[in-house]
Length: 67
View 1 (cartoon, one colour):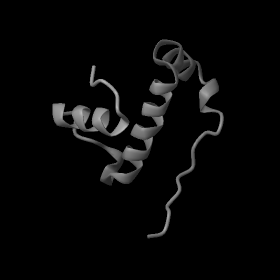
View 2 (cartoon, one colour):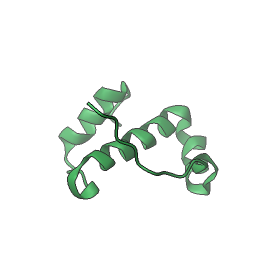
View 3 (spheres, rainbow, N blue to C red):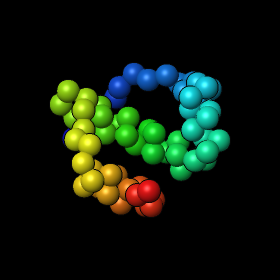
């Protein structure tokens, strides 16, 4: 299976909103941020369903607490 790439800001960690997120959630938060970006890129229309099962699925994949 061929890899697919998407363009993204290589300096995202300097964005004030991302800096604030990292200050609260640390590297785990930044990892979740990029995981969700990749998930959105893979989905049709770049949208995901905001249901409890989606939060549980992402938390399970990333080995973090769903809260």
